[in-house]
Length: 88
Image 1: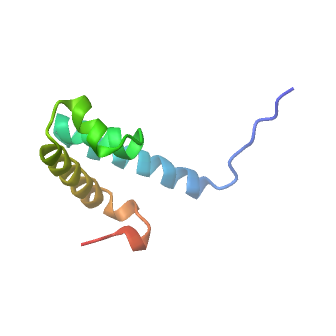
Image 2 (image 1 turned 30 degrees about the vertical axis):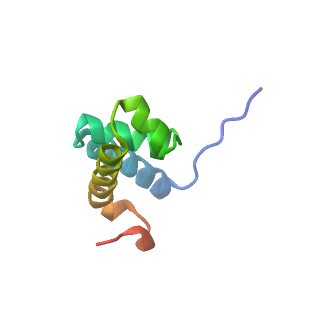
């Protein structure tokens, strides 16, 4: 029989759900290219040159989209990030 672990910290569970919701909204606010650049590099772990090639973009356009996405995500998630990650 498998044991089900019950989360004993409802506040932490609520914070995780809040972060997930905020991240979903923030990703939805990015352009298609920004979102794809963000997901390929930060979530899938692809390097920038391979991601640019996969997207059919030159590297400078790709890195611009990636930077725009990262800044937008940082601003959108500011209240959910640990203090050290909240750049102005």
